[in-house]
Image (cartoon, rainbow, N blue to C red; front, top):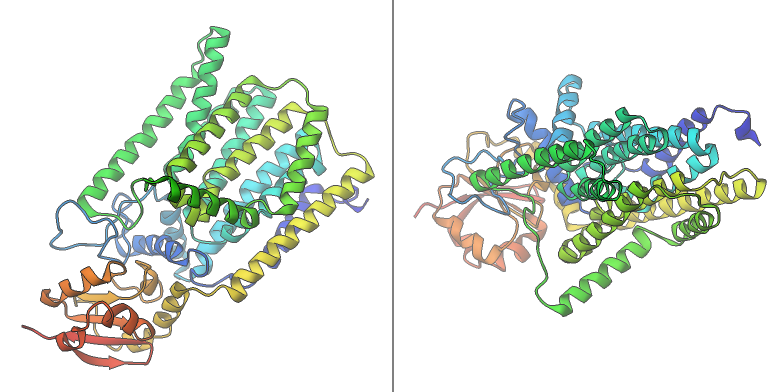
Length: 501
């Protein structure tokens, strides 16, 4: 076959580039939009915020001066500082933007793709060396063409970046379990800790690894110093988690910072079913289920001795993922990116277990053709889902971002830099400002309660979105027009000036 005559690394690189072109040609320089565009806007704004605050790493900020979860004490002069998981991704993006002298979305998207390439290429090279090219390309394709991974691969959400960092850690640990070289364990541990810092949910897999080593210590009755280093890693993550809590208490946060636990059985069942329905198409569509079934059948037929540590690591991770999904059923049912924090790493860990514990290598023409068919099917499904998202899925958040992007010239005619400005629009704390980079106060929820409170405040301007004005503003505060004076409108957004009492 032709793949036997060409460098395997070259095939991977060319395949990756072609796949990126097919999957992301409609979004290479688009502002955050489509599925969870509002959440991705917040992460984009965090990167832009470092350009605004002189790269103050310990005080990340966005453009929203109002937070979903406000601080304990009201701030006299808020700066937009927000609690968030370890923002190394956003800080790095900001540095690159500074060097390139541009804040265009393609910078963020390119860095996310580059991180994906590094993680997948490392995985590919390692498995290729252990089990051969065809096994490696199957596993890499399983991950890369998993629909949720494909969608966020060039997006702005930190879950994607944290998963790729976690994947690098997994590969180093795979090398450790296979080659028994201590340095690989500590390199893997470093990346697991970094992933847990970037996305706290992923600490599940570090805790599970510690549990597996603890079981091994009990079984062998021999102390393993590595468990101390896992404890240090957990202490590092816990310390930043505590700092983040202090940050939230002092400055507030636009991000969810506590579990939203369902209190009644009916809602819980509905949320679990909703998550299951979402994952049938977006996480494990038929092509992936068939591929997973084949690999599990192969494992059962050709398995050798199972490494006990990695087995317990997988089982503890499975327990942690299940518990997390039960406790966070509401969040998991409406936020598909949680699969990048939980189920996809778990499956990746399972594939690692198979690599370690089977002596099977695809060598026959039939097995190679099956893998080619699998890759063709999975990339086709991923492309179809991407096409549907970018052609047909249009959200309120998308329109909000577009209206403010198209209003830049109009808004820049007015001096907002030194003015206290309130923006009242649909949800999306930073969505209006990802093109219009201004610190503003926001009302993005609880309109009936929040809008009447602004009339006695000393705002210089109020900005509303025209297409949602009646539904959002007038419906929740019928006296609005009697409390303000219209300054100007471009048909997309309107600028108002509050009347003084």
